[in-house]
Image (tube, rainbow, N blue to C red; front, side, top):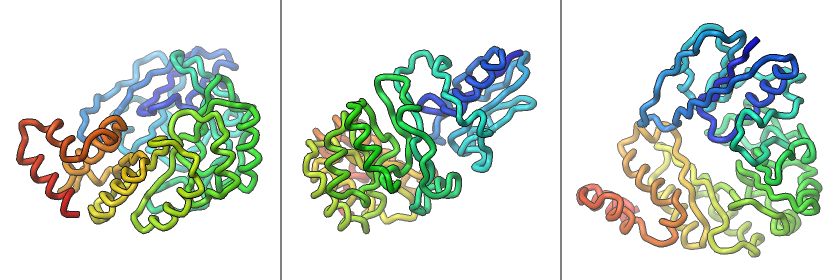
Length: 320
């Protein structure tokens, strides 16, 4: 008996598919993983995938909306945020330890200590999909490698989060909360605990709207242990936002030695300013570039033969 697992577009090992693999291997099935690497970005070409014959069960995980249409075959069990928010694993599979062997090059553990979020951001499906913040696992159950990335959406909203942070400090575990931390919930105690963790990569927060500036200023003062450009802030972009809302956030972060990371809503690719968004993201999302050059210098380097684009986007940036 053979099971085909299709990873349509995950950028990290897919937990659902690894748990399905663990379940079916326990039943004696042969498990095969196909990783398609379909991009999120709509301007990139996407290839169709036709499911081959010879499989008794077929499962496909889709993270990004629209990517399921490129996968063809009979009796495919689709799931994932990009397909249907209501489809979930049964508890007897959800509670299994993931089978990392289907991603042989991986050396990092992934998992959720908590699910859900008490915020209701207009662009986020987590509250709809997972409900309010609640604990679903322990650190010990998640760790299978020397490095761990926790995928919690808002760990600081959990009432007992300080006990968990203290546990991570005591374990000296090389780890990161890769979906970001809610800067609104920073206080002196959890700031201290974060500073003592054996953190992996950048500390990630979010600066979703220029109106959040007062709280950003206040909370950064509580994070005074930070080093230069070791804090990354997701900068959400949507065509409904004034461009000044976006550029002001980027400039504030850069001026305060934080790394902005432009997160474009998919509708940005239908905006009249789509090329401007692209240039902003290309500059901001490469730390070595934004730390060393201005936006104008970057434009000249990126488009040496397109003086019209350089001039237009430089003027747009300066006048906001």
